[in-house]
Image 1 (cartoon, helix red, strand yellow):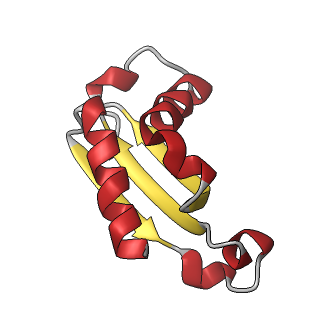
Image 2 (cartoon, rainbow, N blue to C red; image 1 turned 30 degrees about the vertical axis):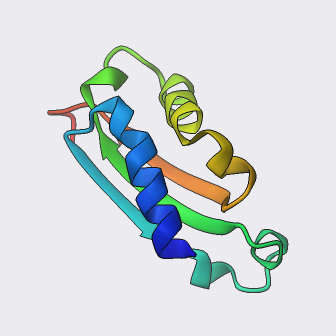
Length: 89
């Protein structure tokens, strides 16, 4: 399921028009965790997009969670995020 989840998340985040996007499945690091037992995975996103310009960390994360939508209530239990603007990394 994790490959499919990564693909779905990549599709959803494309609305943010990222210059760079890396998604890593860290679910294996959380084996036995309550969220893992219920089927939700742990993922890390590194994303660089102009849409984040002028936005604080909370606003950037909110854009990502909004784009991910219902994935956050099922296939994704936890999402670690690094969201930057082009030229800042």
